[in-house]
Image (cartoon, rainbow, N blue to C red; front, side):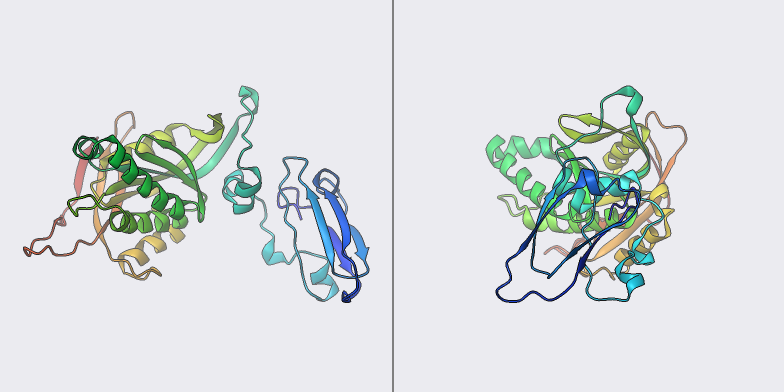
Length: 322
């Protein structure tokens, strides 16, 4: 099945394989099966099959295997499995695409630019990185930064993709606001736990999430993004404080993303991590016309041994210029 062209090809297995049956070898060239306008069916005697799938095009495909079903189900992908269309954003973030085609980039031809209608972008940065390098030295500081990369990459690549690193910062993208928010909450909580400084304190990060249209461009061998959405995302991150994530109004306009945000604040997320909401803010960002409204999540701080809490929660709306 090709989720882009919506074309189907079928393999009809006529019987059970016996112990002495040798594997049937099937060589499938994607260039010959994906573009087929009409469904084709190949019948084999039994189900012990050796597939040689040759992805000789840039086409994306799914190998769909079903048990015995009624004919309508067996020879048609169930309606609930068929999206009305597959967007470029969904394609770029699909785990199979990342595994099979991660080294392929879009065309650099100005006449063939890939315009994305909506992508969720995430920027992160290490808080106090300059002091970190000055106090620890380059080697130990770099080791700590690499450790924080492992935490971020694990969270971001589950449902998204890491676009690039920029110094200590990470840029990632997602096809949904929910996945971005959940990954960022996981990162905010796990980075301080996994990355400890010699004095016992923790490495902390700040995060910004924004969504909108962008142009996909090939840069340094990866599919990068260009446009005002990228600029706003980076500046939203820079406005956040330690262990805080700002999420713009554009992201939270999606009901599913808003539900994910509320679940995290309420402690309903599956890892039962504790977060608190920060007040809605109007961010005045350089190069952006008008304020950008954002809400935040912050790791709920434990009380220190002196009975003090490291962060105070503001009870009013703030306007921040950055």
